[in-house]
Structure formats: structure tokens, C-alpha cells
Image (cartoon, rainbow, N blue to C red; front, top):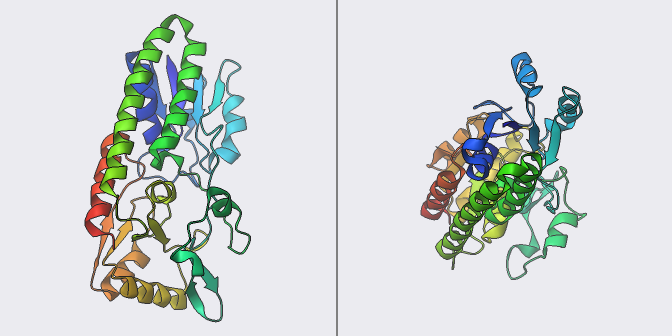
Length: 289
């Protein structure tokens, strides 16, 4: 059965559940950004033959999902982010941005853990909308997996038993990953890592880490803000800045050079989601302070 997904990790999810019964094509090509992607003409032609489109809530979908649905009356769009309460994605969600005084640490960094509603609705913070990177949380991937299972079984009921069996196997793998990561980061609560693009907010939230983003509202920091980030990295003993191939690493490299550290690539859009999550966790564990 031909189906489409928005990003590579979803291909992994759908193939884990659909197995050989599905032919999965990916809309956002490797190296491209899900924020700004524009489908190629051939992709639109191929989409017209698909039975399902699995969306996940990445920005480019806002402009394209209606057009995707219009390619064929037989195409069903499945919102795999349905039922997921997303976190807000503020600029510097661990810091307050003060134009006159630069970046100041929040009083809540130590000794107070905000609940999920506070994380989503803190009106004092500059808001950038909701964080779309829900595939970096094993717990949220389980929710997506159930949506995928339901859509496949409904569209192809003759093979529903196979989809159900594959789903059980996949969710068992997710549960093991989640247990392993909780064990890996036990005792490291509140430890920080610095990234250019804030793609790991749900991962940080699940395992009680602190993600420090470099970009502000999707833009490189201004010189004064860059200096504040350098100062903050030095204060916190941060020596590694994580970058990803979909974005420029210029600012991250400047910070890394200033602190005598290095920029290390991490790709949240890698296709082998399970292996990539373990690799990312091991990388974080080795360097976070």
C-alpha cells in the first residue's frame, strides 16, 4: 500500500508497523528543513497514487496539507500528532531575554520544577508557537504509533492482525528505549546542553535535562546575544555545541571556538529513529554538564 510521510523518522515508524505491506515515501528530502520545504512536482504526482498521508505537525505542512488532500479523493490525511499536548517553544526557554541587560538566568532554574501547563503557558516568556519536534520523545512516539496503526488497519482491514502484531513489537522496543534512557540520565537532572536549533525540547523534558538554544526566533543571535551565550557556556562549563545538518553551524562554531570547545553534529531527522535516539543519548551523556 503506497503511503507518504513528512519526515524520515516517520518512515521508520510506519515501516515498523506496516512492514512489507506498505511502501513509504518521504516528503522532506534528506538535508532539507521541515520548516520551509516545498514539494517537488514528481512528489505531487506520486502523492496522487498514495492511500494515506501521515502528517506530524512540522511547519511546512501548514501551507501544503490542504493541497496534498486535493491531489486525490482517495487520499486520507492522518494527523499523527492528534492527542499530543505540545510544549511551547520560546526563545531561550531556560533564560529570559532582556534587551538592556542581555540574557539573565531565570529564578526557576534551581529548586523548582514547573509542571507541564506552566511550561506551555508561561506568559512572561517570548513565545514562538508550539514545538513540533514530538518525535524526540519516546512517550510521544507511542501515541503517534497508535495513530499509524489505526489508519493502516482501517485502510487495509484484511491485514489488520499483522499491523497489530507489528505495533506490539514496536511499542515494546519504544518502552525499552524509554526505560534505558531514564536509567542513563538518572542523577543528571537539570544538566545542560547547548544546541543551535532547539530540536530536543521533548527529549530534555522527558529526562529532566536543560536545552539551551542558540537561535532566536529562527534567526542567528546578534553579536551582543552571542557574547551572552559564550559567557553562559563558560559559566556552565559547556564545551560542546550541537549542530544539525539542516541549519548553518556558523554561530555554533563561533561559540565553540570562543570557549575552546567544538561543534558536534546531531541529526534529529535521521531515518533509523531507534538507533539515532540511543546514539544521541550516549552523546548527551558524554558531554552534558
